[in-house]
Each structure stands twice: as structure tokens, then as C-alpha cells.
Length: 364
Image 1 (cartoon, helix red, strand yellow):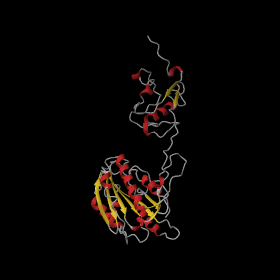
Image 2: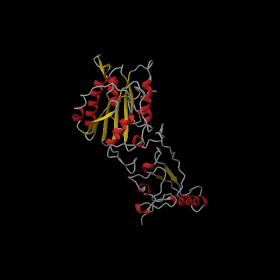
Image 3: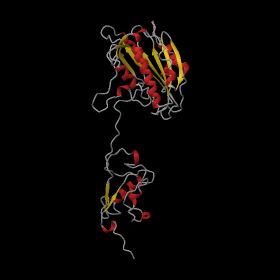
Image 4: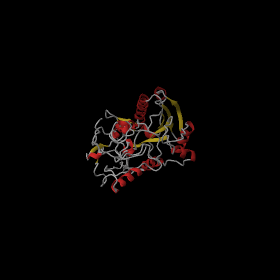
């Protein structure tokens, strides 16, 4: 006859190392080798075992504790302040039946976001879906002024630099994802849809350089958005936050008018388009830079900022009297996918942590 292994009745303490339930250990089987007869151990009626399917501290990926597994010591002579059959053991058996056990694991709360998103920011999944990018190029006379300083120190106009930057932007986006499509709209007093959607950058660039500036008296933003709305059809998804859309639409406006009040009284259809989680309006404002003498451009820039109640669009302002590299940098920042980029005031473009603080939105 085999000699039984010494158990709790022999007064010997048994160390039972409890491991959390994980995908590799779904039922905590390795922890019950000494407590269940099916695995070759001696049955221990005092060792508390949670019911199958019940949630315990430190379970799987849902656990919020960073502490290591705990070690519980059980004794055959003293269990819960008394031997088997005493009130202490009865209290432990009652706790076992109810499924509530004392634990020394410190539960840590998940860190909360420092800045919650705006109340209207219903964001789609961060999916790499195709983009339909509509380039809106302003052709007012301010674009022809020889003010921007090029790399060699000579003066050049904003239209020339903008055309080169648009071509680099389109070709780079096409290399990132060949499913992207591009269209071109030119803006004088009215908006004109010049080139339809195409995935070939050469087709768009073929009609990009044969453009001239004009004297424009006003700018009707609603007219531009209506032209865009008539040419696109936004996706309609059952669940915005979980189902990726087949594509998103982004309008990129390069605007340079300095004087004159911008006309904008959006219709219900335009307002609905601006509030869609699949439509984005990014703006690069080229102003004259005379902040002390003329600040009328700030009013127009504030109008563009107020259009984005969700906080998901990007706006940049560039001085026409500064270096052209500023425009290069803005166009490079706009290469990011609108569903995958952060909020603009959270974006940081430094290579090393601590090199420069995150760029804040310009004060207007």
C-alpha cells in the first residue's frame, strides 16, 4: 500500500501559487494541481477556488493590476482562525460559496486622457482607407506677388511655390497608397471644378501649371463647398466608431486673400457635410505678414477655424514675407491620413523627445 502524502491533517503548510487566468491558462488549471483529484493531487477542501467563468482579480487582459501573482499559505491546524469545523472555517466556506475572497493585490486605475476630445468628435476607426483629396487653389492676385524667399535667396511668388508643393504632395501621397484619388478646383470670384478625381498624379499636374491669377473682389466659401458637395458622395456607415469607411474625402484649400470679408452662410446640406466624420477641410492661409498695420486676415482665418467644431481638421498660416520653406513644412504635415493623425494641438514633429514642444495652434 502506498503511503499517502502528508496533507493538511499532518500540520504541514502547503504553498499554493495562484496564477491569473489568461488565454494560455483559461481555467487556472496549473494552479489546481494540488487541489483537484483529476490532476493527481490531494483534494484540499479549504483552498478557495472560484467558479468556472467567474471574474477574479488579475484575470487575463482585462486586469488593471501590475502586481505579480500572490502566494497564499493554508494550514491544516489553523484555517481562518480555527480548525476545520470551527466558526472560522464556516466563515471561509461561506465566502467560498459567495465567490468573494480577500485579496492583497493593489488594483490600479487606468490612466485617463489628459484632454478629452471635443463633444462633437465622433471619430471613425484609425484605418488606412483610401482618400479622395480635392486640391482647392486660390488664384487671387496676391498669389502673384514676389514676396516669398526661395532657397537661393531670390524672391518668388506664392503661386509658383504652391504649384510645386501641390505636385510633390500628390506624387508623395500616390507613393504611400496608389488607391488615393485627386481632384483640382480653382477659386476666383467663383469656384471651378477643373479636374475630376484621378489616381494618376500626371493627369492632375498636366492642368496645374497653365493657370493665371486674377483680380478678385470677394470670396464665397459656401459656393466652394457647394461645388465640392455636388461632386462627392460621402459614405454612410451603420456604426461610425467601429466600421472603417470605404474612403474619406478631404478638401485642401490654399488661400491667400488679404482684404475683404469672406461670405459664408452655410445651407443645411453644407453644414451636414462639414459635420460628417468622413469629410475634412484643411486650410493653408498665405497672408501678407503685416500684423501691426493690417490684421484683417485674422478675421478670415478665425472663420476657417470656427468651421471645424470637431477639432479634426488642420489649419496653418504662412507669411508671404517669410521663407518659402514654411510652406514646404505645412504641406509635409498635411501628408498624414486624416483618420490616423492626432489633434493638431497634440501633434509633435521633433525627431527626439524634448527637442521642441508640440506645436500649438496659432493665436487669432
